[in-house]
Image (cartoon, rainbow, N blue to C red; front, side, top):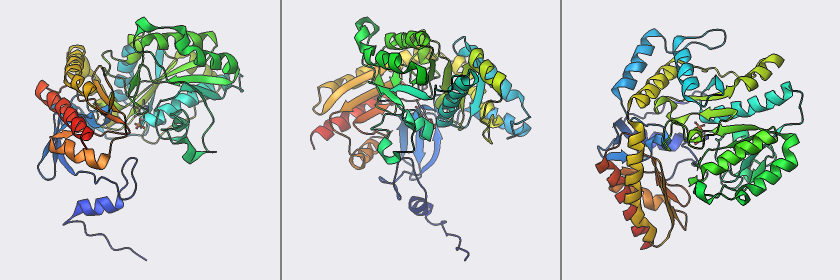
Length: 433
Ligand SMILES: *Cc1c(COP(=O)(O)O)cnc(C)c1O
């Protein structure tokens, strides 16, 4: 039986709300998603005309702001040539240009680029690379991964298996997820406080299990969606040494931290650590299109390829539009005074959020690069907090006990202060409830 075409003309948001899934939401989503009509710079304009300063950069991605003329032009130019062409057996100039940029800018040993459609897929590809590498080397028993608690690496099955077991909802998919090894969440805020004890449990796991381990995977310096925690470079450096000692590959997931967010182009560069495999995503296209990349060394690529092909190949791999806008976004970043901007945002976030520290119900305030976090002692009530942020002209999307911002790098002082003021005010109001 043919279903009638739904008439959405007079009220599309009602139809959308009843029929379309949203991230980590039930059907229908609650609170009701806000319809956005357009976006420009750091501002979203809602259907009802209200303007919101975007403190989320659309989940870390929109680093240059919305509707950027340079990015728009790069897309138009590529569109005139071709929107898409299959990557199996064919290639194009934008893919080469993007690969050249990524190889040049990433840590020296990374020489080979696999283009993927999303961050989660970039993590799947990284895991596959590690597994195929050891198979190629005849070490078939190396099939497990080691990671730390509090991590987030994406929503597909391989990626989920290395997310924090609790916040990553492992119990929902029990029996379907490969059982990985977990060390405690890194706990060291400054290199100066480094003490070998801080990595003792991870070291013990490596000593015990290295023969069955393919790789260690970790987010460098910032654990993002798994809890917005920061840790010191000394931890990462020590981890690199331990991986090399035990002959285990190191995968760094720079999907959230890549392209300047923490003050260096890639977070691992602050710690002077070179990974064997690195995942990029989110800000890669300046938030314009879904695209990610997995980079690896000649050692890993060479070993895999001597044994056979690498077994992954998405339909939209190396999409020319995505490659073109990614090239433009990376160049735009490099041509901007981004290190100064990140430092400035960091200082201003620190100043703006410091007052929260003395408010009741606040457990911690932390700032690193263009990331500002207020951790509360109780989970936030989304239905309560969201309209209060919106009424202050700000778009933020808290989760769990965390109210946080990672704004576009182009944000001005007034808009940044509007975000920190809104955060401070709702935290204060929340304490009085
Ligand atoms: C967002 C994120 C991912 C997943 O990327 P998607 O594009 O959402 O699939 C993986 N790792 C980290 C560190 C992330 O922040």
